[in-house]
Image (tube, helix red, strand yellow):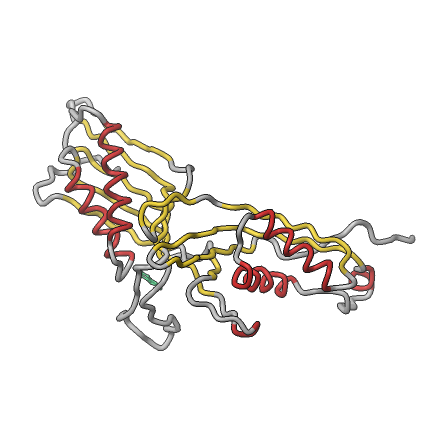
Length: 287
Ligand SMILES: O=c1[nH]c(=O)c2[nH]c(=O)[nH]c2[nH]1
């Protein structure tokens, strides 16, 4: 039987880059996912394992981060063109580059605070029993927020397995899942409460200089309870969406907290409730 190599391509998929442009206290963020597929003289690597024409996918990923530092991201079409031309122009065996970029939009909620466009889900869970007892819990999930500064994390336990470096300036990002228990089932407008809680959560996230996501969580719950007399308890679940500064020193570039790898997993998961001292018993509200 004779066979031959068919169509092929290879590259680094879904490099998650967050680029923070610091314009004094006002920051701008570009949040993109870059997928590269290269093709060309790739017979030998497939047939004999000779890697002489292979630009490693790891290098492709590094190029994305280095180009962000060097040129900025700008319009995604321009960034994609820059990368595609670079790969084909700099490596003779590479004849074709496909560069796909997805950009995730962020709306400003403060000088260095942002909320992700759309995607947020409104929720509720109601119980009612034969004895006439009723509970209403409303909520939201997938409310993705980011502070590009104003977040520190240090002073934690250090044991023989700790490698995390303390930081006084990191990105703090999370997808907020919040649920709030209505004091009674006579809330006049659930939409109004929703808008107020959402606003309070966003304000507290943007306005809290954070020493931990736990502290920010508590501030958000407290702000929601202060803003809305109709509710008596807030429960929050917030994944710590880690953003790691990329080490660009091997490419002769500095990284002043501007170019980040946005990791999707694993993530810290911070959960907690805040309730009024005089909150009525929850009963089956959270079941
Ligand atoms: O805000 C944080 N809380 C933690 O408990 C934690 N743990 C960790 O590794 N990073 C962080 N960040």
